Length: 372
Image (cartoon, rainbow, N blue to C red; front, side, top):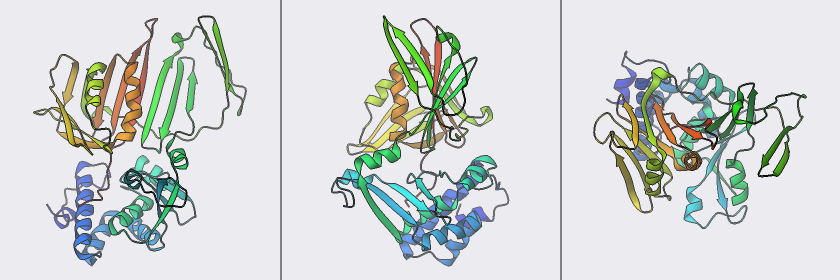
């Protein structure tokens, strides 16, 4: 079905997370990109389709685009000098200078922004599919026009990617520690109070440090961690009614699979289906396309629940941190929902027999298709 047919369909829901609506958006964006590649300009009917989908958000995105407020940031051997490495040329971040002057850093191909509009209208009430900053970045990626470039050192580039802080929630039941990466990946660990030999909570006020005392084999570690007011975290969670697929498997199996994949790939794709091939993990890198298929009833798979076929793509750089917990986990649960949100939940047994849990949430990419 073409974009025009989808736009005139009365069966579409305005909910930005409705499957039919997502299909409509993807169809319109793909046809718009195809049209621009052929005509080297946006035709009037293409602009009208984009306006019908995004409304005033598209108008404001065009304003950002026309004012040349989008910059691609690349890591380089020397600041201010274009990189010679093809690998560096393929790695970049997008910065959009808003109409207010605020700077928003985005991952290419990822539908997420730190602006208030995205937080409240996209994530909270779901009245919008995206914000003007993400849409302006999409326009630049399609046209390759009105774009600025910035070259920074590898260390400066890594500082834009690394976690800046962790948020700690303490209750009488234990601790929860959470970190986020560019609002695209969130990791949390849950440590129940009974794991500690002594567990006390006392609040001295804002700015006071958290004190941790660890004794192991007669060696005492006493540390004090500086605190600050916590940033607002995204409410990553999977509603039970939106879960499409769930797989519980032994960690040895997942470690073996990941060791076979091409580490030069930028993305990893997960395919889950109630029929053959059931469970496929694939990458595409310098070595070509690599994929591993798993049977749904293997000895190392404890539970396989799949209601419909779903294929989702994620950045490998977002998946890799989640894989570090495999060394300590006994089992791992993998779940995906209707929006493509991926959740890894690890069950970790301590030497004393206590159980802790670690969760990783990774958002799907790309949501806005940039290639025809």
